[in-house]
Image (cartoon, rainbow, N blue to C red):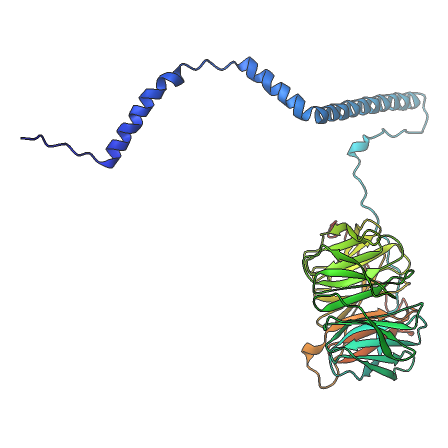
Length: 441
């Protein structure tokens, strides 16, 4: 008879296999030499010196300097004590205070400067005429008229003094999102959601040039102040630099990963700054056509950037806060916190009044130097409009800085001016510097 083979479970078989493997290799492992602790310590010291030698030298130098300073301070204290005892012993009335250790003296917080008083702003004119959201505005250099572009595809030119309509320009086939008036030529530049960039000759009120190249809607444009260059940007995440006369695409500024909502230009470096929905601001080298710095401080989309007219600074607006920066490297200056809405536009005048306009129709007025929010306005909607139509899309000061023009979702243009009857007594500055709450980034 054949013997029955005993069957074992899988666990038993695996355990036996592991035991055999262990017995096979344990003899090799047990014969390892003992660890030499002295050799290990020498090895660690050499590795530390090789990797961190320079840092350790700096630390030791700082320690030696601190010890030297503390020794000098102790000597100074002892000598002053001796002088004090000697003067008291001689009966003199003068008491010499004991010098304290400089490191133990608490630092005084920096004194915040008091903001300059600005008169409050008030609405004094509402202009109707567009049949759609008014998306853009530009004031001509002579300060006689201003142009507005709307979702009704029409550009209208208005007298600044009276508010009367001068002319309507038709040619775009979608919303007009950006306008700029040349200071050197009788030209008006416009861009829109139809991907078109147009140059209008204001002597004939006709389009004389088109700039073709954008792959999607063009949301913003700017004219260089000293050279005949036009910069446009929009939903294709690029900013394009055009030669105004030849219509040549000189540079395509690539780097943003989302819609560019605002572009500004100046004669000094950086010559071009863009703000984008990818939450970044880029400073561009116009000559090279490359990005020279990227500012990533904002946590939400940047919808507006603007230069200060006299200081070498610029500001940016985002739903998280408004930030101020120094040129040319984009060094952060301060946050302007409190406009808790989607801020679409900024405007600043030479007196240092920064104004921000938001999607919910709120306007906040700030003192540029200190960041003090001295006034908050709610733009009234046109009769017959819903409250949800109280959005501000664009704003600008006139050339004198005494009139603020806003373009809004209720299809109107509103003009604000300073209240002549206001005084420092009737509208005092409610300034409470809050150092601890000011963010450093």
